[in-house]
Image 1 (cartoon, one colour):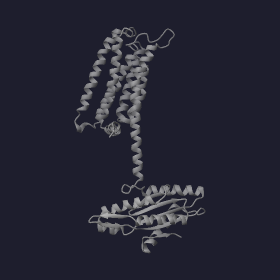
Image 2: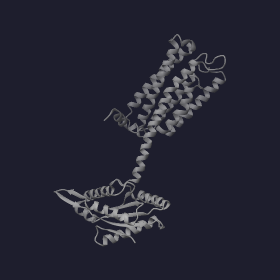
Image 3: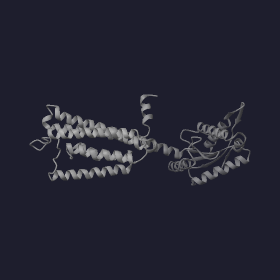
Image 4: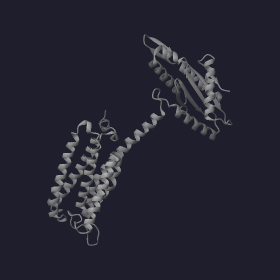
Length: 383
């Protein structure tokens, strides 16, 4: 197993993670953001080229709060990690993580400017990913609370009760353009959010797409034989009938029924009966063409759709199916063998014929019963 495969196996499907594991990922991402903001404020305090652009009194005050929030994040991570197993799926954990993430991010945004790029990225991008990854109401609650806090702080700033971007000085030049240092700083502060948002959204949506494909495949596939199931084979027959009508091509349908299947189940057990069905399905797949369709119609019956084949051509292919199944032998315990055989009924629709899908299947089924009444292991074509 490669490193990539091991990583994918360990991550599995994030949509199926427990509440504690989802919250832990959120807090780890947030801790990285906090490290970046802390490095930002420390640089503003101690680097001689950057310090003139910072309000040193405010930087000294808020650096204490920055460190306190980092310690709080680390403490919450420990708390989430050691959550007892019976509480790991408690959605309250997600509420706690989302509220802490949202409200404290507003505080960081206030420090550098509520109308800045990092705040916009967090307010717009994070809820979108959160709605996919986390509990809907936990994300909605945190988003509304954060938005209300933004409104309160913005109003206080507008009324000059609070300073705008208290950490920063000289945001704009005389011509009204933002200073290059803050354009670069905002881009750096926003980049981790963009990276985490796109990475997590991509991975979660990819896993979501895989799961949806699996669900669709399961809804169309017979779990024992791996063939398509009855509902989907009838859907495909309807599609092929419409296509053949538009292209003025013939269409043939073959109903296949394993002979003496009840005796196989009664004499050898259902496990051997299952093996017989699996072997018959494999024989059917090997006998038909690439553009033909084979499905399990029910029990020991199979339906084969042969688009573009007239009665003569379809008869030849149906005989190939019969002989392929007849050549199938199952090895049983005590060196015994079990040979399979099948009866086949076929119906065809010519270019000019107008019949329904139900009529095609019914005619093939009636022909199948005639084949069984005539001694089995043979093909009968409906009139």
